[in-house]
Amino acid sequence: MRSTWLKTSLTLIACTVLWLPAPAPAADSVKPATAGHAVAQVKPPKLVVVMVIDGLPSEQVQRYRSQFGPGGLRRLLEQGASFTDAHQAHGITVTAVGHSAVLTGAYPYRHGIIGNNWIAADGRQVYCTEDTRYHYIDEDTDAHDGTSPANLRVDTLGDQLRYATGNRSKVVTVSGKDRGAILLAGKTGTAYMYMDKTGDFASSTYYMDKYPAWAERFRAARPQDRYYAKSWKPLLDDKAYADDVPYPEATPSNPNRFPFTFYSEIGKPAPDYYLRLKKSPVVDALTLEFAEAAVDGEQLGNNPTGATDLLGISLSGHDYVNHAYGPESRMSHDHLQQVDRQIAQFFAFLDKRVGMDNVLVVLTADHGFANTAEFAQARHMDALRVNPKTLLANLDAALAERFGTANLVKTSLLPDIHLDYAAIERRGLARADVENAAARFLLAQPGISEVFTRTQLAQGVAAKSRLGTLMQRAWNRQLSGDLLVVTTPYTIFSSGTSGASHGTPWQYDTSVPLLIMGKRWIRPGEQAGYAEVVDIAPTLAQILHVRRPAGAEGRALTEALR
Image (cartoon, rainbow, N blue to C red; front, side, top):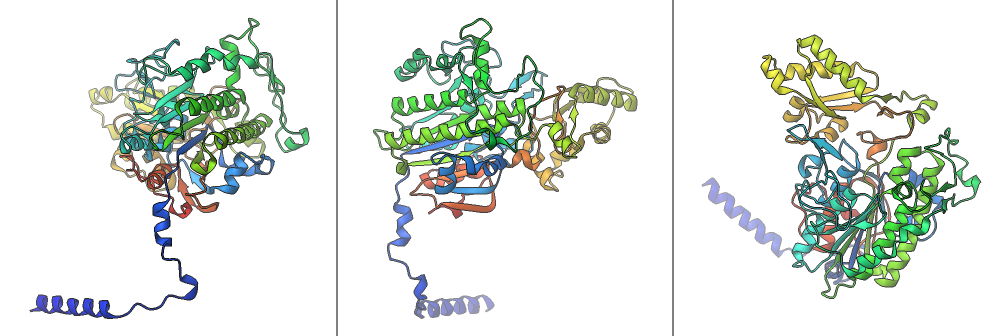
């Protein structure tokens, strides 16, 4: 009886609701009848450009924004959506991991790229994009060179775009680093990367058997040689750099003084010259020049089929400059200004070839950067340089003393440490006991803030704080080590005495710019809400009306969409 009464009552309520007239809307809420259809009818962009500036902290964009020219980063900040609280939301903030997040929308535990390098089960060191089945075309290829995306365990937004258009969309990527290009290109795009020994941009046999004609022409012209005997000089007046730290002490191998002249020890372009180009704005100028050649050669943005194309550009120079001199340096400051002007020229090129009204641009970074330890110390922070070899040797000795067995530390690429579980089991020890003893020892060492064990990570109990959540996302059950070590803020693992680094879950390493510009699709303005780099792929998928990548866990940034 109760069921019958309930169904009857619901039916009467439904009928009553349907019969009642809708209240008149307030005058200021009335919209044209077609407004609800406007967004759905907007055509997708002809070209999506995804730019990653390697090693660019968000704070540098804000600190130096008043000095940017009108057409580059300032254009993105003023005409696009700017997310001021955006993060690479995983714990091991390095190049390969950050680039993988951009177009997969996935965290490392899912996409499988847990570092630039890691230790395989057999103890062999693995480079993130190595694949000995393939080789560079017309270039020397070492065993650990990046030649394919085989280690990437998920697909990308570009893969979904090509799937949705029956492979009519073109996905082309270019970078100063092989991992920067390959991990943006996904499984079905085409990657080109700068060659350290020749200064050429090359691809591998994973993508093609021979270069297209436009790439052959670019390589034959050798634009990289035009910089020989030229110098990198500051772009701005000297007073513009007044707040930068003084130059560090110069050495013969690291002059630390403007101008930086590009030369070779043998008096003509050679491998040492091409390496020097990487630690300067030149590698980025060449990357963008190659990107322009790709736009023309592949007709990107003017696809005869009408399909949307995707161009991925990773600018690597800023990372090299920050590593060498620190993000607080005059060199880092000037490098960002140089890149800003280069981006402005590239946008002007796109405006002529495609029309910027037909282009959607995303700009972000793969990670931020810590200041040099010495800079942090001068500001009364407990920053250290922790020698990895010393730390691991002391850990192994402590475990040997505690358990009576030597070499319980099998191998390590910090922040990952692998224990010798076979030796642990032979001694009849409990894994958790050894893990906990190792963690206690490490936590007592100067410069170590947190240690997460395999047992904790496998059970998911690490994710009880922001820091723990980021480290949980960074850990892959099959690939990662048995201990994940987090330094104290501004402390780095380093056996050197100069330079800066990154790789931690602290804010300075996770906080990155996230700028999206596209007149027809994006609402300009500053967005103060929290966002992640993994949100880029879902956002682009919504704009392009394609399926999200399989491993994507981010959200569509609907607050920025028109």
